[in-house]
Image (cartoon, rainbow, N blue to C red; front, side, top):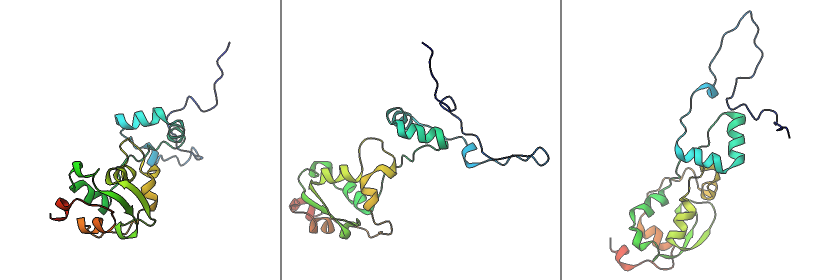
Length: 158
């Protein structure tokens, strides 16, 4: 049996598209000509997601693997992890910097929705779609407590 090859499958590098006349040939570097550094997380993501790999082969741009940040994520990072399971009935909404209301059982569950553990492109993180981009208010534990059903008293005393 002969192996069939799909057109364009063997091309991994992106080439600039356009007509060039031999009279005024000047190569201007494109954005795609810049070498991009691919780390192990990105290689793993591309190996597991065919759509992302095809997008990389087509455009030459690597997926944006930044970690999401927001004032709420910054606040949650200051709370010790042992209390994440004790803070219950968390409602994320406009008072915390997100456009819609989302209910979570614990703060740990809310943090997993805000910032997934697995490497994910920032456009695929669900919470980024609903984050109010201009929200820059510095949140306190009292702001979080107003949106929760139960917060341990030891955290409120801080």
